[in-house]
Image 1 (cartoon, rainbow, N blue to C red):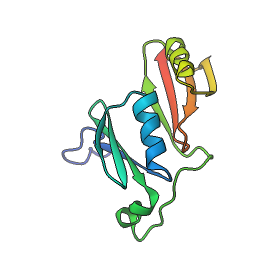
Image 2: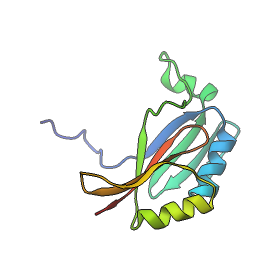
Image 3: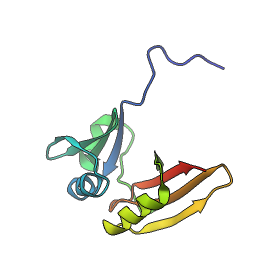
Image 4: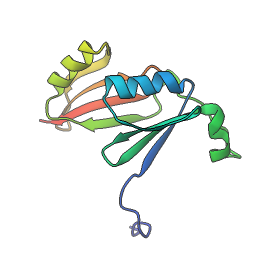
Length: 132
């Protein structure tokens, strides 16, 4: 097993390429309650603890990944972000109050978690999970 790369100790930012920055920003700010740290015409940065969630317009993403191609999220789940919570059922009740429809859950999983899953308008999939 290799040692970690020197100086790496946390995830600083997660950049997600989106088709509609405004809709994704509204969802993550207004529904999930993430504080907005920065916004311009091409991106919005919201904070999840010390990790920045950067919602970047797919058109502006090209220079970051060139020569690879960039594409926005789709209805096919490509990534699942998990939030640890104290009470999945209470969070599900609040999500429903805020107009969020769950994909599944709450359900007890064989690996010792109770989970529920939902997506943002642009297809970013979130799981909330608590220890059983």
